[in-house]
Length: 448
Image (cartoon, helix red, strand yellow):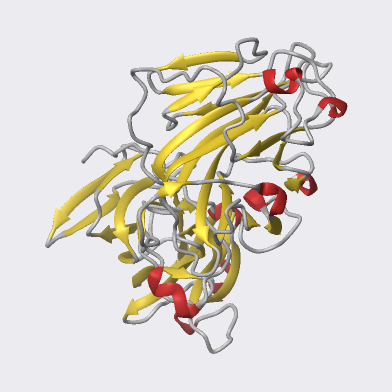
């Protein structure tokens, strides 16, 4: 058995591509990278469903149109990981001169900021991007705001800053220390008070068009108040007159961009007619899980179809979604050649995702000691087995996962890592005997 690699994979999703520009998804705007000059006061919020929290439906991002001060057609797209929870999603967007991100107390989430061409949706790249975060303060209950960054090359705070800093070789974190109210929030970026400047932080990102930050609202000694808090930001070097801090051991280049972000627990069953065996006989075959993740500007649909031969269910009504897993029921004594595919939700075309973790369970016999299920796969990077009772054997380029004794309530999960994949196949075999049929459970997720 090979050890499973580690790594954190996340992704950005912006609004739907048109078919005419979809071939340019992996291209970047031509031309020499220059400094980015931002002005959110002229921008418009066109879509707000950050992390699936609403209020809009569809793509789980926040899309802000026209964030460049020099008239350049540049939009900002922000995506969040699955840990994001808003207290009041209606507060996400823009207000006065600032962008806003609202969080629930006692939550922390990663956010990816990406700049794209307003017309082509191609990625922008800049030599310098300044991000300023404002209004680091806390509630009367003591719940405080914190930001963590691992890809900036420099930062600025005032000499009388109220922020508490924690700097390490991996980056830095900054948290509030003083109580504040909505009355002391900045509204005019050109006329900020000393208190407002002392609660601000400017960060520099170089030679990139995207970056990641982690934002958190943490409870104080008195716990959480019955409301969340909102981070304010823009893209101007508000504290450039202060002394720049460039820790010598910080990374010299930004961290690698995100891959795909999967959230199968949020997916919806879009089609349920695997092998034309139902339970939804609609003329279209396959099992499709809609919005199982997002990558490269599109929601990802995850599909299962019969690659070869026929499919024999015992109880087709079991097929579909079950507790965050996809479920396929098979008849004892049958075999299924299954194809898994990643599809673009908007045009139905195959998508190649850079890395994905495919997990499945159900290996072994049923409670009656028969219908032992095994799964054979190939072309993966590595795997791990949660239950050591599951065996892995290799023959003819295939790895077969099986179990020699009856399945119990104990976990018998197999996790397989695929890289640069748009489709893969699995052969599922149900032996004779037992109760008549058995379920195969599967799901996709990020490599952790």
